[in-house]
Length: 69
Image (cartoon, rainbow, N blue to C red):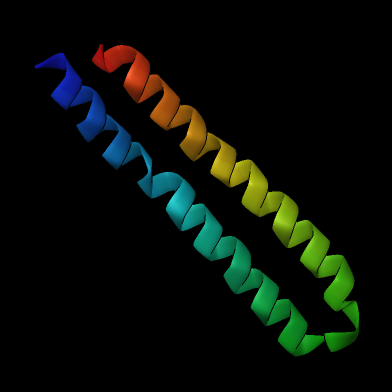
């Protein structure tokens, strides 16, 4: 029973990084549309933000496997 709850908990916790990644790239597209010359700077910041948000999701799935067994 606890394994099922861990997987459900991970599914719910994956919503946060998903929303965060969506907001990061929405801001990136908006920024590039406004000032195309800043594309390289904004792209670096967007990829860094993506990596940080994705680490939360990977950490969450690791904890789901730890607590499910």
